[in-house]
Amino acid sequence: METVSIINIVGLGYIGLPTALMFAKSGLKVVGTDINNKLVASLKEGNLTFEETGLQELFKEALSNGIEFSTEYQKTHTYILAVPTPYKKKSKKLDPKYVISALNSVLDVCEKGASIIIESTVSPGTVDKYIRPEIEKRGYVNGDDIHLLHAPERIIPGNMIYELEHNSRTIGADSLEVGNKVKGLYSSFCKAEIVVTDIRSAEMSKVVENTYRDINIAFANELAKICHTDNMDVYEIIRIANMHPRVNIMKPGPGVGGHCISVDPWFLVGDYPDLTNLILTARKINDSMPRHVLGRIRDIMREHNIMDITKVGIYGLAYKENVDDTRESPTFQLLERMDEHLAFGVKVFDPYVKERIVDHQFMNFEDFLNEIEILVIMVGHDHIKSNMDFIKDKLVLDTKNICTFEGSYKL
Image 1 (cartoon, one colour):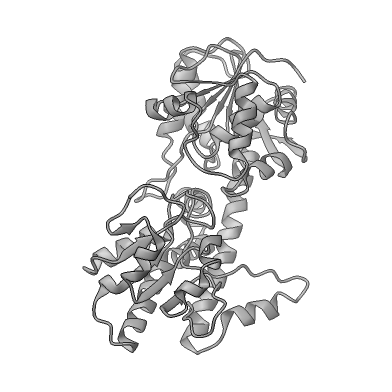
Image 2 (cartoon, rainbow, N blue to C red):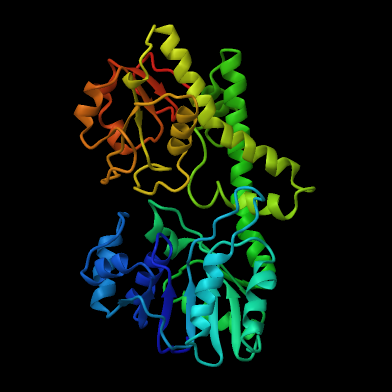
């Protein structure tokens, strides 16, 4: 593995920070850069900015190996960009502004021959459409002055450390030689297969992975709606169907969140609107689930003659179990639907979200339960699974199929 002076990792969020810590743990010299002064100050003081299994221990190891944090971009040969890549709500196309901004900041300081590795998930063709032109504007020669690569992240909150080590990786590069050098860097901590390919294939493969999962979830969610309409048990039906050796239907749920499955398919819809009929339909189905949950809440309120929406409690603000990550959370989508229907005052609780980020959010579980009659489980945290005895006297809408007692309502 070729020695590098510094790996400058740009963007210290859910992807960039764990990646920086893994490189540092492996003995490489790492500087993490972020424009958020408060975030950088917190890391310098030895305080993590989000919770994740095993992250605290990894943080300590990285600190002992000399990892540094700064708001300044470093003058070096190796950069990894792990910045947000949202989509434009109207066109559904990728919004590349954060990647372009980070790229130009790197170009201000980088050394000739530097490798710039984009880890952020991007739509197919992003490097050709947005990144190369920025390099050319600055007078750099791609492949000589600058080496562009795409190494899309492939980890999930709640299991990041394990997946950084054990999930296979893809390195997209213009040059096989440069791609193999970067492969050597990632192999310092990645124990799985690392594939070197062209940049466009790397871009597309990451988006395809998440789109496949989105479509599978949409099928499960559509089944849930069908089964509810005709009084069938969707979970029993999926369980039986999955006994077939070539069937693997995912579980239905209240919606799809996070920055991957709920976002990446839109890149394809935005870029290929005439060719993405199935993908668009899947996105619409999954985005419709919070509205379906709202309809189920209405049904329960009518059945039990409850007229006061403030007696409804929503459990879970995170987008998935046992994390504090609220990006694209179905609960926020549900709260937006409620707001549209003038349904104000619903109570909210999440044991992992330590700061108040929505109205009527409770910090204490017991206080939360004392204020409600209907409990809507949006996230199956281990916390709620271990507190079933406290909720069995409530009217429970269990959108995650985790309740261990009779009488709960399902999707």
